[in-house]
Length: 122
Ligand code: FES
Figure 1: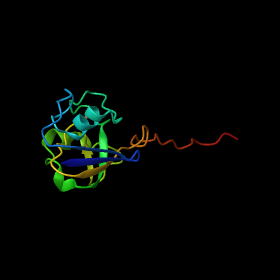
Figure 2: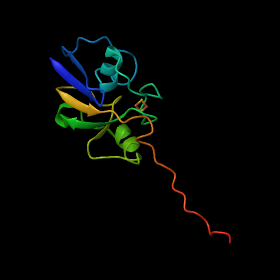
Figure 3: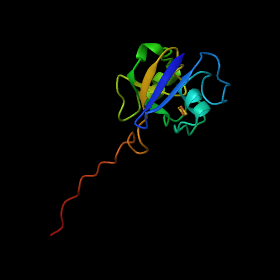
Figure 4: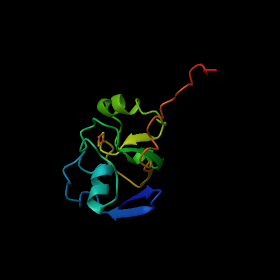
C-alpha cells in the first residue's frame, strides 16, 4: 500500500501501487494523478504538461519516495518565488512510497509585487 497525505486539508489516500486508472493529466502515478483519482483539490492549470507550476507542492516527508526530478521540472521549479529544497511539481513527481505533501493555498506561492513609493509630493 502507498499512502499520500495532502496538507493542510489532511486528505489521506491509500492505494495499491499500479491500481489506479490513469487520469490523463501529468505522469501516470504522479502526485497529481493520485489527487485527481481521489478528488483531492490540486491546481493544475496546464493539465500536467509541466508548463505552469500551479501544481507546486512542498514535500513534508518522503522526498526519497518520489521519482527523481528531471530537467523539465527543474527548469520550471527554480522559477518559483517560494521555491524550497523540498519543492516538487505534482504532475512530475511519481509516487513510489509514502509521502506527505503540503499544497500551498491559491496565492500563497505567487510573488507579491513589490512597490516602493515614489517621492512624496509636498
Ligand atoms: S500542472 Fe502545470 S506544471 Fe504541473
